[in-house]
Length: 73
Image (cartoon, rainbow, N blue to C red; front, top):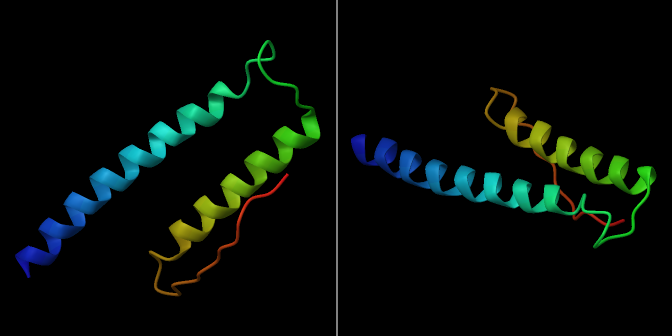
């Protein structure tokens, strides 16, 4: 049983740290000197990210809802 906990902690730390780094990279897209975007693009991006976050969070509840899909502008 301890091995399952240890594996969870190991994977959770690695995956959450990777997701945090990737979120920082998404934030870098806000540089208007390097990129051209509009408010609709930003809304779509963050809506997709929020949907994925809500889906992942829901999977930890007893209902275990799942979702998915790729993000596209």
